[in-house]
Amino acid sequence: MNKILPFFLIVFFSCTAYSEEKIRLLEISKNLNEPWGMTFIDDNNLLLTEKTGEIIRINIETGEKFSIDHELDFFYFGQGGLLDILYKDNYVYVTYSEDRDEGKSSTSIARGLYNDEKIIFENIFRAEPPISSGYHFGSRIVIKNDHLFASIGERGGGMIAQDVTSHPGSIIRIHLDGAVPNDNPKFINRPEWLPEVYQIGIRNPQGMYLSPFNEKVYISNHGAKGGDFFGEVKFGENYGWKIIGWGGTNYIGTSIGDGSAWKPGFTKPIWTWTPSIAVCNILIYNGELYPEWKGDVLVTSLKYKTLYRLKFENNEVKSQHIIFENRIGRLRDIEVNSKGEIFLINANSNASLWKLEKF
Image 1 (cartoon, rainbow, N blue to C red):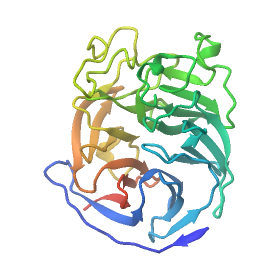
Image 2 (cartoon, rainbow, N blue to C red):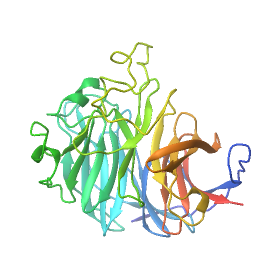
Image 3 (cartoon, one colour):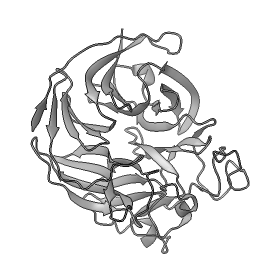
């Protein structure tokens, strides 16, 4: 374990015109280099990944940072690098763009026992085939009932998301050691699918959360020029990319498919954004500090540098609200501890860990 400069600084912002509550953002730790994912190991310490390859433990009470060694063979290029991280029962799970030689890479998952000095990781999944692209790794993970769900981006390949003999553009479901559950779609009603694949037809899902209310898994997904969405992960279903674009168009303005936002036979998103907000990670709030937000979806936006709140009832979005916007840059990840405290990281090369508070 390498101790990094201890730091604690509070910077106050108030946001009154765009939120139901007066809030402030406290800068807990700074000088982070492209942070991507974070996970709590207890109420006072979290692990954080930097896309450039660092795993850092941060004490949220003091702001102190401690680097943790590893030997992952990651590919730092474009949107790739060391990505999401999840702590569960003394194991650490990470997603990353794995170097597969000849300029190709894949979204891969590894796990290792937590150690404050160095984590020895073992790969438990790699997306096939490896692809020569620096785009659309997806790469969020959640654990539900001893199964790991992971979002795998389509790497810019478009219709590869409809190829059931490949992983890009899908949600996968595996056991925590990487083994394949025997009740995945392949073994029930989708014999042509790869064993790990749980749902297909997704573009670049950079958000995923297990609801504490109904035990459903939800994702956020980047559309193209418009068509970002929030939706439910469903067994054996197809979100339709790139046959449909959820209301968006290609970046040059041409239609995606026949221009339909949705067609029967495909999973319908719960909520969409056109124009795109560059939606990143999500959180369904169940804390006591913000009782009026209980059950609502908090949504981070890279493009608009905004934290949104979706009023969420009976699996439907009733309304959208802005908590704050354009205060700390592009928002990458959001997490909550058991106290109900909310933490955010921005996506800059000189980024910080922030805590949301009322005042």
